[in-house]
Length: 251
Image 1 (cartoon, rainbow, N blue to C red):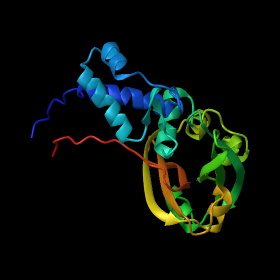
Image 2 (image 1 turned 90 degrees about the horizontal axis):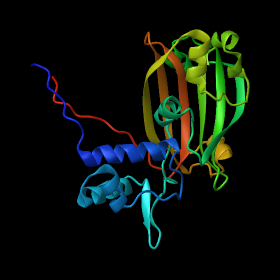
Image 3 (image 1 turned 60 degrees about the horizontal axis):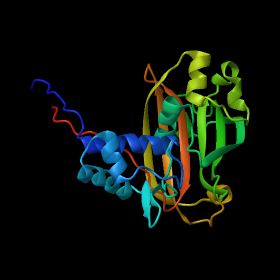
């Protein structure tokens, strides 16, 4: 079957995507007003009805909310920032987290790989691997919202020594590893599931053991298809994790 031309996204989708990126990158931050329907209509040269549709779409995703007497403001407290969001944000904006979130690296060390970690990284069982553990805080409420660990082949410790320091790597670990080794992060895979908090989760997030959480795993691949980074994460409940996809009629 011959390939088909894919038409540009409808106007309202283009506007939604633009404002969504501004929110996800932190350019528009929590409680900041976004343009009104009339302003969107005028700035983008679209109909008022289409502009109203834009705001409705953003509200339905939980990215904004209407406040009487003020207008429509950013409201992403219930949005979970997953690995894909962070990796894309660092490429687009140079920032890893939204402006109202910050991570604290609680440990960075060489450890013995579990079977799961060894399989994920493609190293021998019980091999030495780098583990970086972090807790992400909402800076507005000073409350933890997620915790995660990232694992790397232990061989990287010599060529990328910052992986073993608890200070933040400002350009992000994928870019740092690229700078040190030439391995370029080109794709990733995320998995999520509902779960209950372990003792470690409870300690990191300030919740009860057995409380509902969103658990995730992620793999980051280089240009040769090898795993650069394997991660596991956990987030508090009532936070939405979002992703977009296209459905093309290809076979």
